[in-house]
Image 1 (tube, helix red, strand yellow):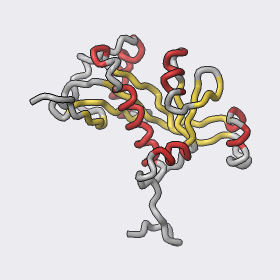
Image 2 (cartoon, one colour; image 1 turned 180 degrees about the vertical axis):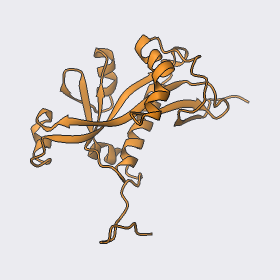
Image 3 (tube, helix red, strand yellow; image 1 turned 120 degrees about the vertical axis):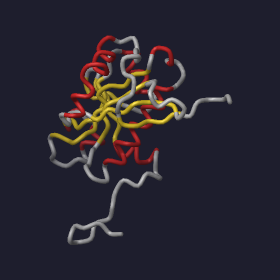
Image 4 (cartoon, helix red, strand yellow; image 1 turned 45 degrees about the horizontal axis):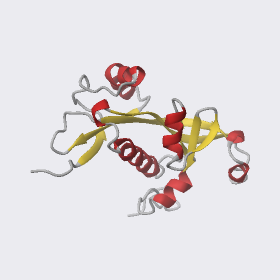
Length: 185
């Protein structure tokens, strides 16, 4: 055996959360103490990064939930396309963390790409104008900007869903509906 591990992302289950530490007290505390409750109460979906060989050890995690953004904060080129809506639906990446032992291995990028793909796939059922993050400082802002995120206000950034759609054109996110509203097969 050898080589790089094969990573998988799946919904949080009964993995060993106690062993996860990313070095940020808030992110560690959330994962250990609140993640299960957020899932149970339908507040956030929590996804964990594992390896195919060890589906109990968590290398990282992220959360997705619904959010809205103020259309007035968008660049003018985008506000022209949103009509008269004051608020627009968005998907929030509320938290994204990689275990301290695995930081610097591009696993944050792996998690972000998975989150963007899931957000895009979800637009087949529930529309979202953009993916939004509330970055915790300039280093985190730089991470997201590297992937095309733009500032809204303060430390809030967004990436339009149309940009994500262009990045992942093979993702089938919309199902055709017939006039009666049932899915075509």
